[in-house]
Amino acid sequence: MPGDAPPNLLQELIPQDNILGWIFQLVWIIVFVIFMFYGQRIQITIMLKEIEGSLHKLKLMRDRGREIAISTIKELGKPTEDPAARIDRFLEHIDIGPVSLDPVGIIQRLEHIIDIRDLRFKDDVKLMAPQADDTQTNNLTNVLEAALALNQVYKIVRHFYLQGKKTLSLYIVMQLQMILPLVMKECEAFANALRAFTYGQPIGDGAGPLVAARLISGKNTREIAKDIVVAEATIEGRKAYVLKARGPGGNVGKPGEAIKQILEENGGNVAMVVLVDAAQKLEGEEPGDVAEGIGVAIGGPEVEKYKVEEIATKYRVPLHAVLIKEDIGDVVSVMRKEIVDGANNAIERIRRLVQEKTKEGDTIIIAGIGNTMGVGQ
Amino acid sequence: MEKTGKVPSSTKRISSIFMIITLIMLALALASLFQVVEDIRGGKLNLANIAISLSAVAISSYMLFQLRVKPLKLGFETQEVLTTIQCQKCGYSNTRDFQKGDFIYKPAETCPKCNEATLISSIYRKPDEKEKKQKRS
Picture (tube, rainbow over the protein chains, first blue to last red):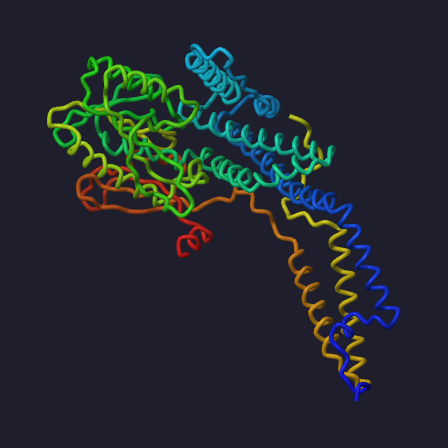
């Protein structure tokens, strides 16, 4: 009989024959209308909330970084006055790049600006920490640079967050929200770096200098360019000039200038230049994996890379690269075991490369590129 | 640098509006569950209502659980760093905790086997739980 048929599930869930059913229907219509007209605004509000959370974390990181910088300078530098005000001024430092409208001589101008920056930072650190020795001064410069990076990232993210909030522009907010995971990852790496720099521990970027140090351990070194030392070694019957930044303080030096000097000293009579550096791994690759290639494996503002390319082209010297893969977060964090093992594998690769590409009695240059913090020679 | 003013706490921030909404949801879910129990006592078994009210209680409890205060990990946590010392003559090696002032190729204590000078051959950090998990997967 029709009257005995069981009520269907929809009728059970949203009864349409009573007042509750009508209320539910009305709510659905209101929600639909709200989403139709205010959907984008709601989306922006949710995204701004997410950004606000990350911004709060960035602020904590920035403040903690500042605290660590102050306490480290007080501990190592034994200043007579409170360095907080000077550090606060330092954390607001701005670099102005050279004019690129007329690119002639831009590399030399960029190098000049980088030199001034380097000198200014070290002078400031010496004023803040008068009792610190050279190694500590270099490490403190690195500490302050990491704190400066955290402050700048925080301020840039805050700028776009406030701009997005003011204009309610989905495109400003969306772009910020999309890059935020990568920004946070980099900032966490800087936070890790601050600890490593405070204690002078080797960092992932030091993979190149570690390889060079393994090759010249116990040999006499001389300074060939600013903060770069070189030693002569015999590798598979070849005369090798092995160079790295002067450690164990945090330093990258001027490897391009050093390679130029060695090539000029030898009248370009060099069979091969091998550059060993840390390289950013792709997701899915293992940290510490070693890859080979050609070209100048020098990161940063490219001044040193330009110098090597220029001089190698002049003398037609082959340029080889041996790269130790690592994550962006590992570059400025304390060195992982896999990277130490990667450095040992890189030495094997260099030996094979030397055997295959050069003859006995040839002269070669091996350059360990990167920050040599915590790696002596 | 602008004045930081009140120092923010290093814990996860929780929106008070979100907390209130979650608590209201939990209260409504419990009221609906109570209603279902009353219906069952009255001999009326409505399976759809039971399922909906139990799900509502579960979802709102889960949301409340997720809102619990957790300290934020900023990346400044101290990591366990190890120093390996190696004897250049006999190959003896020993790994100990990192000490301030250690650097690679720094002369270290004398070798307990051959009494020769040793060197620090490597300094590295122990992988944390997150990295170990990533490696396993």
